Amino acid sequence: MSSEANSAEAAAPENEKTEKAAQQAFNESTSDLASSLFNPSEGYLQGSHWSTSFQGMATEPFDQRICDALMAPINEAEVEIKPDGLLYLPEIKYRRILNRAFGPGGWGLVPRGAHSVSGRTLSREYALICLGRFISQARGEQDYFDDSGLATATEGCKSNALVRCCKDLGIASELWDPAFISKFKAKYCVEEWVTHAVRGSKKRMWRLKTRQWEYPWKK
Image 1 (cartoon, rainbow, N blue to C red):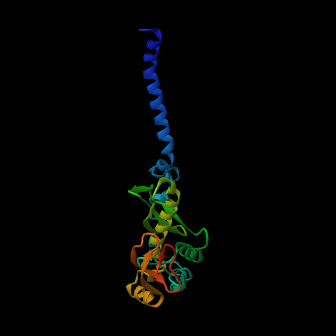
Image 2 (cartoon, rainbow, N blue to C red; image 1 turned 60 degrees about the vertical axis):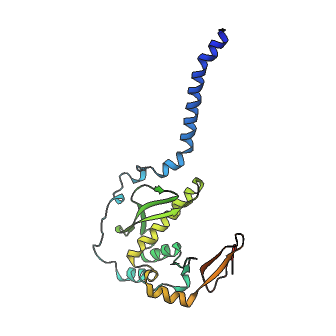
Image 3 (spheres, one colour; image 1 turned 45 degrees about the vertical axis):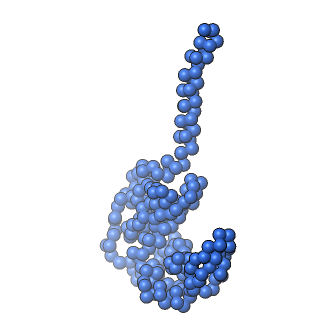
């Protein structure tokens, strides 16, 4: 066997090792974003007592001015309806109510753990803290379709948790009242058969009477 052949055979294992190492490095680099989202020991959770504390919970009611702002009757003009008939208040409205009640900087959401993922649903526990007191805790969730949408999903997850936490403060409590829901739908909403412009499929969906169907749906 020639010396060139011997050299080639000796180099082959080294080349394979190099290729495997390069592939491993590539795999690790491409998973950096996802691993950072699901890391249970995220730095800003460490040493924060709010990641586990229930300090101030149910110690005393807030003053009357704050209670009035939180439990004010819902503005029906701000209520929206999803195609499946679910009534909701846009998340930004909850933030504005909290700002009126406690002032900007007087409340905040604190993560109570790392993100978790099940299928294509991202979720995370958050606690609502107002004036230095624990108020409520809820798990927010948000669906996503590919890894490029993870950043947006984390924001949706946080917003969903905020809405759920606000239930314990009485904000927009009418949206969970069957009597209010029935009256609101009868007064402001309509359910119709609509057709998908591309697929041609038909479906019964809800809309506000003041809105029109948008593409790809049409009556």
